[in-house]
Length: 560
Image (cartoon, rainbow, N blue to C red; front, side, top):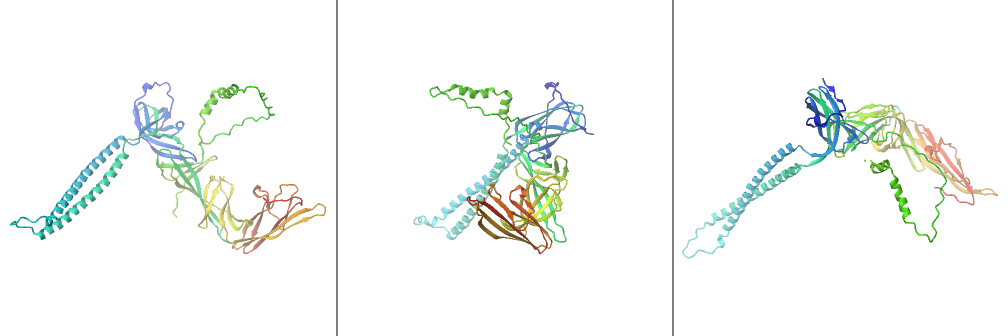
C-alpha cells in the first residue's frame, strides 16, 4: 500500500543532521501546455532507508521557473518532505561513464582501421616498385650491344610476355590498394566525428534538492512539477461544408486541431499531453486606476532680464532632485522592470470543460522535440447545422458569395486561429476565426456561388440646378440590381450597397428608388444599406436603388 507523501517544514533542523545526497534520475511523464508556457511533470523512483535524506535531481531544464517547482508523490511508508531547494548549475551533457566506454570502443576501432590502411598503403608502394622494375625491363632493347664475342641470350618473346603480365598485375594491385585506402579513410573520418561528438561537454540545468525524512525503509514515486516559458499551443481548424440539395439539409463539420511548439531545453518523449486554454502568465486581476485631476494651467515662469547671468547650477540641482527623491520601492521597481514577454480516422482528444477553461487530453502518448518545430494533433470534430445564405456587393463585385452561419453549441469555446475552408470536398480558401464562445453566432465565407447571377446597372445619372431665387445644384443617380437564382431550392440573398453621407448641413442626401432597404448603417457603417431577399428557384428579384444630392450652387462638392 502506497501512502501520499506529506510536506512539512523542518525549520529547526540543523544542517548537520542531513544524510548524504541521494542522486536520482527522472523522466518527463506528462505535460500541460498553455497558449503560452507549459507545466511539466517528471516522475522518479527512489529507495530510502530510515532517516533524513536529500534527494537530488539534476535533469530539470535550466528554463524551469524556480518559484513553480513542486514535489509530491506516493511512498510505501511514511515520508515527509521538509523543503525543496533549486539552483542552476553546469552538468555533463551525457553520462561520463557511458561516454568514456563508447570513446574507448571507437578509439579501438579507429586503431584497427588505421592498421588496415597501413597494410593497404604498403600494398600500393609494392605495386609502384613493381611498376618501376617492369619499366626498367622495358629499356633492355635500348641498351648498348654487348662486346664482340659475347652472346645475346635474351628471349624477347618471353621478355615481352613478362612485361605485359607484370605491368597489368602491378597496375591492378595499385588500384586495389587505392580503393581500400579511400574506403578506410572514409570510415576513419566518420568514427573521428563520432569521437568528437562524445567529447566531454556541459550544459546548464536546474538542480532540485528535496529534503525528506523517512520514518521507515521505503520506496517512493516522486512527481516533480515545474513551469517552463518556452512552449505554446495554438488552434487551427478545418471547416468542411456539405451544401446539400433540395432534399438534403446542409451540414458543417468543424475539425479542431492544435499546433504545439516547445523550446524549453528538454525533449518531451512518450509524454501524456494535455492542452489547456488557461493563460497562467496573463494578468490575474484588473489594472489599477489612479485619479485624474483637472486644473488651470500654471502661468509661465518669468524670464531673466537680458543682462542677468545664465543660471547654470540651479537647473542641474533641479534635475538631480527627482532621482535622489525616489524612494527604495520606486528604485526597485525601476531596476526590476520585467522584460517584454515570446482519409484515415483521427483519434479524438477528450475535452473537459469548466466554466472558466477547457482542457483537451491528447489520446495516447506523444513526443514533442526541443527544436521549436510544430507538432499537430487533432482534438475533436463537431457537426453543426449551418444556415446558408448569399451575400453580394454588386457595386464592387458582381459575384455572389456563399456564407454559412453557425451557432457554436454548448461546450468548449473556439480559440482564435486560421480556418481552412472546404465546400463539398474542395478547398476554397482560408479564414481568420476570432474567439467564439458557446451560443455565439459566426459567419464563414465559402467562396463564389456560380448559380447565383447578379447584375448591376446605372440607369440614370444627371446633374442640374433647381430654384428661381436661391438656386441649388442636384446630382441624381439611379441603379438597378438584379439577382437570379439557378439553384433547385430557394436561397436567402443579402444585397449590400452604399449611398453618400453628408458631412455638412448645407448638403442634403435623399434616398430614391422603389425598393426600401431592409437595414441601414449596416455594421455601424454610415451609408451602408442592405436588402434581404428570398429568391425562389429559377426566379429573379430586382432592387431599384438611388439617391439625390442637393447643395448650394455657389459651392462645389466632392465624393470621398
